[in-house]
Length: 89
Image (cartoon, rainbow, N blue to C red; front, side, top):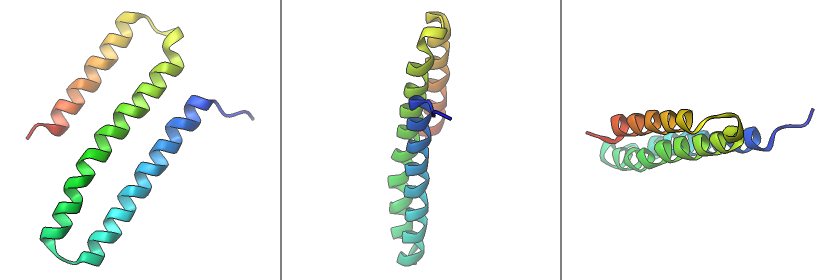
């Protein structure tokens, strides 16, 4: 079975993202201090949205020929709402 290059790219990004999250959690345990663990956690706040944007972009490029411009605009609007909800404090 031939794996679609867009699917492989999206899955690879998610594996890398998950590995970063696990490594950060292990590092927090090693640090064993709330203030330092909080700093590590704050750095992770950049990883999630970045991976979301990248995987969504790759997926949209992969199916762009099957979607109308209106549907692509709605998808970007939805992702924008997600990011605003995640990043706004």
